[in-house]
Image (cartoon, rainbow, N blue to C red; front, top):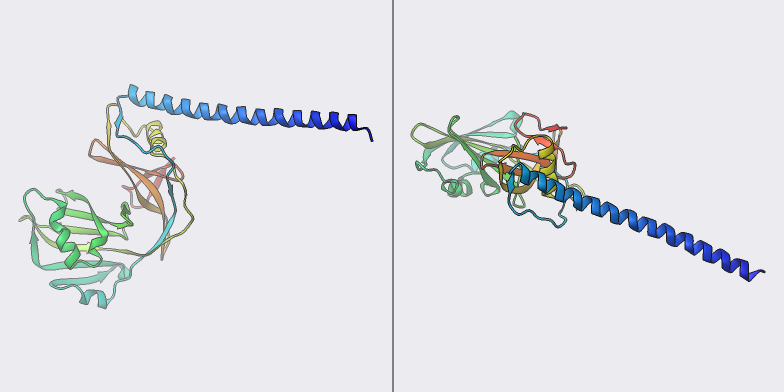
Length: 265
């Protein structure tokens, strides 16, 4: 056995391995540099367009898909509603309720005015969070929450109050999602800055606009007959008025104004 040749083969093999590992290291380092450069470049674009935003989380965030199903209300649920006349509609998935005694609102409405009524008089009322007041339709809308995350624009998890010309709540409609479960293991989601980049690239952020609020919630990804899949979703409030939504896994813009949650490619 020629130990000299074997030694030479080993040396050459290790040299080749070292070169390969060095190449891989350089590749990863360059990729990271490119990523940092891209991020810096995008922040410069936002600055050039005079688009402002609050401090954003920069550490990885993990979340998961959820599954849920619409609650089917029954006569037992109706019996729990005191001082209210209720009807079950939409194949049992919605309550239509009229109050025997209207609830007076102040001239300068604050969501907290309905907190007590929700907790004491509405089924699962503590699971809803104020969304908006629409003075054109005379409605006040609350969306359901899960683990302190809002379920955005979900027709199966909404309370809509109606008030009259005397600024009194006279009725409401309610739907509710139950059996909410974690469908997958937690995975890293897009950081909000990447979602903002998508909005900017698609022309959703106008120059000189200001992102006044950033929060994470859930929107409907798949709507089935008896259940639905919910996906983590970034919500960006622009100039304290418009809400823009981005799927936190896929990075697609979601149009929640339509009847069906459509994605903007």
